[in-house]
Structure formats: C-alpha cells, structure tokens
Image (cartoon, rainbow, N blue to C red; front, side):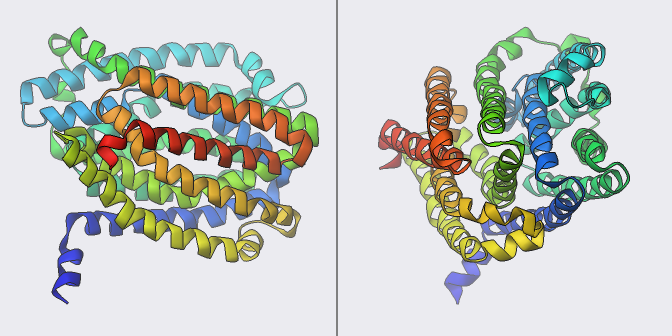
Length: 424
C-alpha cells in the first residue's frame, strides 16, 4: 500500500492523470466531430480535410519559425533570471508578429493560387486561405505563449489550456459543420487554433504582465541565433513532413481514388486521438526533463521512466483498440468507412514503434543536435515517400500504412543505435 501511495503522490502520476483526462476529453470530442464529418462530408470530404490539415500544419510551423522546442529549453534554463527571460520574450514576440503578418499578406492576396495547389481545380475554397491569413498572427503568438508556459514548468496550466482549447474547437466545429458542411469543416480547422490565444493569454498573464516585457530595448539578435538551430530542426520536421504527407495523399488519389485517400485520412485521424496521450506527455513533462539533464545517467533515467511508466500502458491501449476496431468505426463514422478496419493492424504496429522512437527523437531537441536530427528526419521521410509510391500500386491504400510501419521501425532502430550510450 505504501508503494502505491508513493506512486499516486509522484508529480509524474499527477501530470499523467491530468494529461490523460485532457486526452480522453479530446478523444470524446473527436468522436463527435468525426461522426459529423462522416455524415456531412463523407470519405471524399475527409480527404480534403486531410489536405488542409497538412498544409495548415506546415504553414503554422513556418509562422512560428519552429521556435517552440527552443523556447521551452531556454525558458526552462533561464526562468530564474528575469533579465534574460524578458529578452527571450521580447525577441521572440516581435519576430513572430513580423513573420506572421508577412505570411498573412501572401496568403490573402494569393488565395486563388493556394486553392488550386491544395484542393485542385474542381473546388473553389479561396475563402479558406483568406481566413487563414486573418487567423495566422493569433495562432503564431498562441504557440509562443504555450511554449513559454511549458518552459516555466507550468505543466498543469498547459494541460488546462489544451482542455479548454478542445472544448472551443468542438463548439466551433459543431456550428460550422452543421451549417456549412465541407466548407464549415475546413473553416473550423482555421478558426479554432486562433481562438486559443485568448485562453493562453489568460493563464500567462496570471504568471506575469506579459506586455510589460515587450520592449524594443530587450530585443536581442543573439537569442534568434541561439534559436535558429531549433528553428531549422522544427521546420524540417513540421514543414517537410506535412508536405510529404500531402504529396503521398495526392498520389493515393491518382492511383486508387479520392475515397481511398479518405480512408487513409480516417485511420490517421483515429491514430491522432490515441497518440495525443504520448505526444502531450512527452512535450509537457519529458522534454523539459531531457532539456535540463546534465549527463548520460540522468538522460537514461528519463528515457526508461517513459518506457516503464508510459509505453507499457500504451501497449495495453493499442491492444484494446485493435479488438474494438469495428465498434470504433461504427461509433465514430458510418458503415461507409468499414474498409478502414483492414488498416488497423499496420497502423497500430507503426504507432507503437513511433511512440518508442519519439522519446529518443526529443533528445535531438533537448541537446541541440541539429545536423543529426535533420539527416535522420529527411532520411525517414524519404523512406516513407518512396516506399509508399512503390507499395500503393501493389496493395492500395494499405500500402501507405505498411510504409509508415516499416519507416518507423527503421527510424527506431537507427535512434536506438545512435543513442545507445544514453539508453543502455
């Protein structure tokens, strides 16, 4: 009993429990929005939603300059030094606002070009890109403020922001999809993240007077230089990754059709729900721990804490999901989506390998290993892209999921060898 009591009192258990609540809430919200999408937009509309998500992900990463992980690291290190903290806040804020405004102009006045690139000639959704243009600066600052909270070690506040943001996203999605169908689904992707600014600002303003720190004299180019390595790493991952996914989805549409591409987007959407448990606990709890780890022994402790406490639980979750796959599809979507059940086994195996590799991948950011990360990321994306192009004509849409699984296996193996001294 004392052993169990000690576990219940640990900070990791408390954070994990609250994070689990956040993830469960988001999954519950996902059940509702997925059902709405299935009923009102169908598999073809789901493919369009996937295209916009990939494009938005790349754009949002560019607009935030890929600073997120760098901000977490430097704020975690300098949170007791008010002078340096002020310089970080002022420098990043000014940089992000300038970049976001420039991209907003490009999006707004070239909306027709982006519409053809993302949706093709058969759809006219220029209004989506004009909406992104207006929302982008708010989103960029939201990402910065959330990273700031994370770096300050305010784990609970970060998770509460995610919880409230998910509820806002649900309300926006409900209204938009019910009233505007596919257009509404696309607009909800754009609007919800921007509204998160007001939630995050409330929490950050309770820590300190944010705008009082935004002074021109606090702008420091050395901070931009220090963050540039993180920016390069994040942009390679967050921009190149979604673009590769977009290219693969376009190939799937050409080879096996828009509906089949919608099935891949469906299994990807389901995967996103349960992978949130891993990604959020990694970014909120484990990444700051890796960032301040002083030697290999401390790093090894963080790695194995994740594997023993988080990954073992995740395996159980994946097994339950596999046996409940028919129920999940019928609950989240419609009978029209039942072919997706054939993709579950490969997707779940791939996601287990991905989860095991993610904690190792965060070490690249924690220790600012720029070139090693870029090489491994580009190699991984190349394997995925070329293998999917080979397997899709042979196995249909299942070939994409098979390619992901193989790619995740190779990536995990490479990282395990590269970090073997910290791992073993």
